[in-house]
Length: 219
Image 1 (cartoon, rainbow, N blue to C red):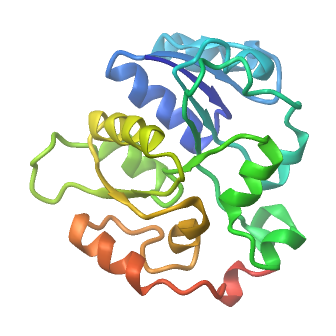
Image 2 (cartoon, one colour; image 1 turned 180 degrees about the horizontal axis):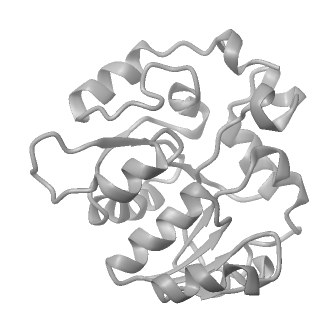
């Protein structure tokens, strides 16, 4: 697959490494000149590009940037991807730690719904709750005992099938956490967030989640 990644931080950079390792063609961008990603490109064989070009002709696009920077993305930045290509949104709202107050999210809009509305595109929420070092190092073949399960949420069944296949390919099981409106079940402060659960424990943790944000994750 041809995959575009917008954002080259802990998660974006790790996904660049993992997806290249299993043979995908990756174009990766940050908010600066592609030359600033020369080391990552040299290490992985990915192509460093401008953010505006990352989605061009892509079969899958991953947006992995600070929540607060989402409004700064250029209008139509995802429009050059292939028709029907899924968009993964990996991020979390960290009001105290990084993002400041985002009124719509504080008022109850799920984080990835807010992102989807700003992008003007459907998204699948994935990769937001696993520590990047575990994403890099703890993927194992299907059927391996103790394999970590990652929840995903979204409204397009076909998109979720593609995303699930990619997650499986890089070494993790998948649990469908429901619609994008249900994606709060995997946001910071919920029982599944930051845990390396298997499938059954992930299902249980998602069921136990409540929409009320804990104090640490409120502005």
